[in-house]
Figure 1 (cartoon, rainbow, N blue to C red):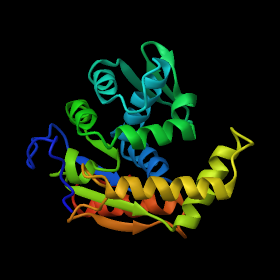
Figure 2 (tube, rainbow, N blue to C red; figure 1 turned 90 degrees about the horizontal axis):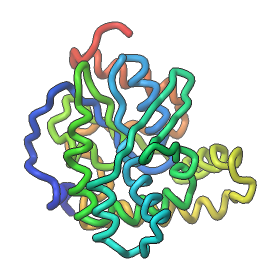
Figure 3 (cartoon, helix red, strand yellow; figure 1 turned 90 degrees about the vertical axis):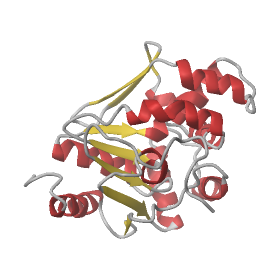
Figure 4 (tube, rainbow, N blue to C red; figure 1 turned 30 degrees about the horizontal axis):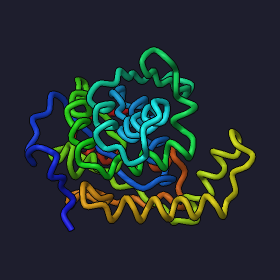
Length: 242
């Protein structure tokens, strides 16, 4: 099965700045690690998964049918979205002037993101938006196809994984603080279904790039994983001591 998207342009992409891609499944820790890495090395951050969550959330707000590909594609093409990350880890996602960060981080938006991400039209609409984020001094790109489709020529590609049990526990701990109705068995089933959908979709399936370095974070802290990536980047002269 190919890891390339028919909707994505060419395998060679001219980058305005170096990129480190961090791909992986839900609960692998890629979001936390990407934020820590970007802050530590002073680079920009792209949370590509949040873009798909915003598309799904916006579709829900507009009352679109879950299978309305054309409607969601228009959203992906036209939406005005901005991301803000504070040093303390606070996130704001502005959609047409409204902060939707809390709404797009719930499990409903996550399931919706996995659904719309399977549509080639939506993925194609977001390619240029994602590549435009590669600005000096560099970009940390967090997602599921950053190393395979969006930034195939990135000088450092990481595929972050963890056991399914550990990923479910992490996600449960994260969501329990916001929604007391979340259960570990239910979340485990949702994650398993999302893994299956993401790995088997015909467009940009969730697989490591051929030249990605696979890191298993099951027994590692986010700090330890970040340290490992910093060391890898240093050996490739992407940054100095940091």
